[in-house]
Amino acid sequence: MSSAQSSPVERHATEAYDVIVVGAGFAGMYMLHRLRGLGFSARVFEQGGGVGGTWYWNRYPGARCDVESMQYSYSFSEELQQEWDWSERYAPQPEILKYANHVADRFDLRRDIQFNTRVERAVFDERSNSWSVTTSDGKTVEAKFVVLATGCLSNARKPDINGLENFKGPVYHTGNWPHEPVDFTGLRVGLIGTGSSGIQSAPIIAEQAKHLTVFQRTANFSIPARNGALTDEERNTFRKNYPEIRRFAREVARNGIYAVQPDGGALDDDADARRAKYEARWERGGLTFMYVYNNLGLDRTANDTAADFVRGRIAEIVRDPEIAKLLQPNSHPIGTKRICIDTDYFATFNRPNVSLVDIKSNPIEEITANAVRVAGTDHDIDALVLATGFDAMTGSVAKIDIRGRRGQTLNQKWAEGPKTYLGLMSAGFPNLFIITGPGSPSVLSNMIVSIEQHVDWIADCLIHMRKHSLATMEAGRAAEDKWVAHVNEVAHGTLYPQANSWYMGANIPGKPRIFMPYIGGVGVYRQICNDVAAKGYEGFVIERAEQPRRLVTG
Ligand code: NAP
Image (cartoon, rainbow, N blue to C red; front, top):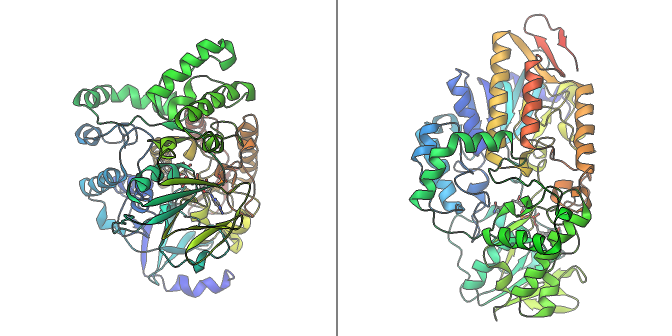
C-alpha cells in the first residue's frame, strides 16, 4: 500500500497520545511506568490477553528462566525488589508471570494497556510529525512517539516440514503454548527441536508420556541448572547487596549477570587445573559455566577445551554410547549458539520410554496423519511438540507494517538485515524507538538489565525533546552505518558467527545472515549510549517543533 493510501486512515484518527507502546512484556510495562511518571500520555497495545510477554506465551512443560530469579527481576523499585519472594534459584514460568501481574497491579499499569489488540500498522506523517497507529480492532490512534517493546523471541516459528498440516493429532509450539493444561499421559509424543525450549521440556514430557521421540537436527551444549529452593538467607543476602549486585550487572558483567568474572585464558592452565575449574562450574550449574575463562568466545583452541569437557560429561551420563555420540554437539563452538540450561536432559535418554532420532543425517521426509517419517521409517506419534524457535529479534517488528519518511517500510529498509543506530532507532523512522532491538546487547544479556537501560535512555531522550521543544529525532544515516559496521566488526572478532544460530538469522530460511545483537558487553554499550546522550544525542538528527531545521547531523 502506498503512503498516499494511508491518508484516509490518518484523517479518521480519534485518539491521540504522546506515546504508543507496542507490547506489555517486561519492556512495555516498565516503559509505561516511566512515561506516566514523567507526565506523558501513553497507551500500550498488547496482543495477548495479559501482561508478561514471553512469559505469557511460553507455558510449555518445564519452562523457566535460566537467569537466576534474584537477578531476572526489575531493579527500578527498591520496594519491589525487597518485597518480592522468589521461591527457586531459577523461577518457573508461572511464577514469573505472577511477578509480571504483581508489577502491573502494584504500579496500576492495566488502565493504560489494551489487551487482545495487535498493532498492525504504523505510518509516519511528515506534515504533522506524528504516527498513525492502526490496531487489529480497526481503530487508528495518533501519537508523537512509538516505542516497539515487541520482544526478541516472540514470533514463534513453525517449521516448513512437508505434511505438517496432515497430522491428525494435536500440534503444540513451545512459544505459543495453550493456556489450558496439556496432558500427555498415555500418549506417544514427538518433539522436534533441541534448543533451550526442547531441552527444558523433554524431561517433563518424558515423565508423563507413554513414549517420547526426540527429533534432533543439531545437538546442543547444555549445562545442568542445579535448580533448588531459595533459602531466606540466600534471598536476604541478595537483598542486602542489591545496590552492588545491580551496579555490577549493569556496568561490569558483559552479559548483565552478577557473577565472578574470569581473569585468565583457558590455555594458561594445564589440563588438570582446567578440568578442576570446569568441574567446579559444572557442579555449580547455570549460564556462568562460560565464565571459567575469558577467551572461550574468542579462541577456538580454548573453546575446544570447554566443549570437550561437556562432551565428556554427556558420554558419562548417557548409557547407550550410540545415543551419547549423537547427543554430543560438534557442529559449533560451545556458547556460539545460546547455551542451554537443563534439569536431567541428557539422563532422560536413559529412560526406556525415550528415543532419539537423528534428523541431521536423514531429515524428516514428511509428517503423515499419525507419524513422523525419517529415512523410510514411520515414528508413530499421537501428539507433536514443536520446539522450533522464533524469528528472533526482527520477526515481531517485521509483522507490523511500519512506514517512515516517504512511505518507506521498515521491512524494505531491513531487507538485507536490520540497520539501527545503537539498536534504538533506524534512520528514516523518526520518533520510533525499539527496546532491545538488533544492534543492542539484548539477547546476549540478562534481558531485564538491558530493558531497564533502554527504557531509561528513551525516557531521558523524551524529557530532552520536551524541554527543548523538539519535534523529531531519528538516527542519522552516517552514524547508523558506522554503528552497523561496528556491531559486525565486534561480532566477527569472536567465534559467534561460526554457528548457524538464530543470532545470525540462520534458523529462518531466506533471512539475511547478519549477527544481530551487539556483543561488546552491556557495560561498554551503556557507556556508549550515555556518551551519545551527553553529547546532545550525537549522531541523531533532531528537528525543532515550529521550524523544521536540522540541528544535529550524524
Ligand atoms: P532455538 O534455540 O531456535 O531451537 C530450535 C530448535 O528447533 C533447534 O534445535 C533447531 O535445530 C530445531 N529446528 C528448527 N527448525 C527445524 C526444522 N525445520 N526441522 C528440524 N528441526 C528444526 O529455539 P528455542 O529452544 O525456543 O530457544 C530460543 C531462545 O529462547 C533460546 O536460545 C533462549 O535465548 C530463549 N529461551 C530461554 C529459555 C530460558 O531462559 N530457560 C528457555 C527457552 C528459550 P537447528 O539448531 O538445527 O536449527
